Amino acid sequence: MKPEKDGSRPVVAWVVGAALVAATYIYFLIFAEFAFLELVRDVAGPRLRAVMALLGGGGVAGAWAAARVFRTARAATLLARGLQGCAGAAMLAPFAGGPVAAGAIAAAVGLALGWTTVVLAAALRNGVGGRRLGLCVGAGTGTAYAACNVPALFAAGPATQALLAAGIAILASVLPWPRANGSTEGSETPPPRVNQAHVLAWLAMFLALVWMDSAAFYIIQHTSGLRAVTWGTPGLLWTNAAVHLGAALLAGAVLDRGGRRAVIAGATALLGLGSLALAEVVRLPLPAGWWYTAGVSLYSVALVEYPARTGGAGRAALVFAVAGWIGSALGIGMALDLHRVPATFVFAASGVILLALGRVRGAVALLVGLFVLVPAGQAAEDADAVLRGREVYIAEGCIHCHSQYLRPRVAADVERWGPAGARGTPAGDPPLPGNRRQGPDLSRVGNRRAPEWNRLHLIAPRAFLAGSRMPSYAHLFAAGDQRGEDLVAYLTSLGEDTTGERARMAAAWQPADVAPVAPAEARRLFTLRCAPCHGNDGCGDGPLAVRLTVPPPAWRGTAWRHVPPGPEAEAALARIIKFGLPGLPMAGHEALGDAALRGLARHAETLRQAPDLASLPGAPR
Image (cartoon, rainbow, N blue to C red; front, side, top):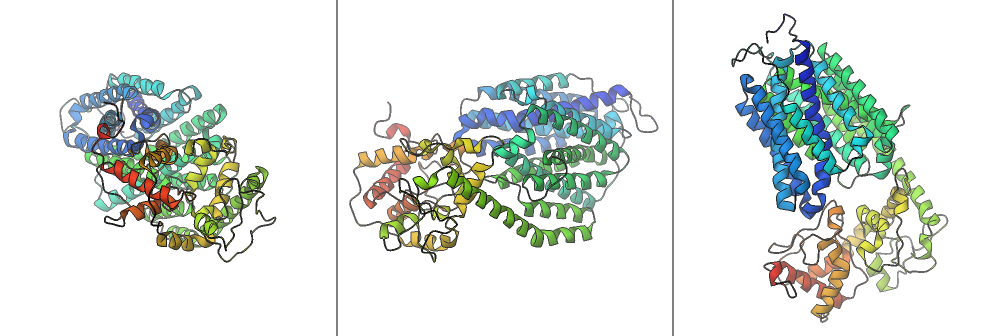
């Protein structure tokens, strides 16, 4: 297909190019980011992170493999093979029967998708021409985002989404990809030459944007209140679809006029302001989700247009491997157990982008905000959440079963619930000493329980301890209801003044020199209190494990992570069982006696040393 003087191609080539971009983005958005994770979450269990690591590793490997074999004359064949691989992996995903199968499918998804994105970006400029390349990418990107926000597709089950993504990939694989200047290798229009510093600057900008977006997306998806106001209703989804399409088309038009820097600056501003508004750090005249959505579309178009216009397969592989796959992994890893995008990170990422754009003064201004303005505003918002959470604590009647008063001269109180600290009486107006101590004292719960544990326990207390008298407060965490998160913030604040003292007290504690409970009793206690997370055999596969951001490890045949070897191992294990691990979801069992703690420690060591499940007493033969 002979290029015209203005670098354009016939309309059919432009349409095919946009359709291929749309198909690839739909596959990524609705399947790789949504459906696949839901399909393998339960079967992968505590190995979910390993499965996701295989997905990202496959993406990087597929991108570099495609760069090595890419030839313009073979673009149609290479692209079809990649899309067919995507389709095959998606069709297998609903049938993953365990972590090994899930990992293999994850690697296949990553390989096929990494291959496809690099081949498409490398071939796009010669296929559709340079004059309307940005608009082609914008039309495809906007169409994909809009389609994924159609309520029927967005709300479909993961198996349906996987099969739909596979069907779209199959259809895209048979589209007639235009050949550039005939079919001979080397006859394509060469891309403009750019220096290494230019490439590194753009790579840093895309990495910062993908990192910020991935963190924001994960937090929104896993925080009921944010999800409700961002894409929680059909009306919001339709609005998101329109904003995505409009912003993507605008980005494409601006890119075709050489405005890539303007697109990146706009994406940074919109994405950053949207993230800050969702975290309630700033207030905007329009819904925060609109700002976030528009920013995502702007940079997503530039992410494809930049390697397509300025470089070949090698540059596409570099951009997609580093900014795409690694940036996504860094964003999701940072967002675990967060329920707002950290304002400090938004400012830091925006500063990196401004420096890369050569806007030194703007970057300095952001640094001032990072170290002066944001912490003050964030502290005020945190304080407001704590105050609101205290009102929820009172309104829900928590004072009827939980005290907030330690008797400093009662050793059992101090050992179980925490040091009394400088304050001898309950704080706050009104004070909340509690009516009866039906459950644990909560005056120091913030240095005994992680926010994640408090959240999950409030939602389903009997999932942690069968027969617990505590009722479920899941209604506080319903979509659009902030009360649950405010209550968690309040509980986290309790005991802040004694965190260091509590840690020193726990480190110095030693179990009494008493005989442990009998093995049968230790096994019963383990099943009741520990198995919900660790599993009956210490394999980290308890029913709650998949809901934890840091799932418990499988013990069998491995060394303890937090227990030193030697004669003090049993005491150290008992200490962890009693006091938990600060900063991790592992909670303590403060009310257990020393005999029970020693028995549980020995039972855990027995499980760790067991060669396999078949050798355990009572295992099926």
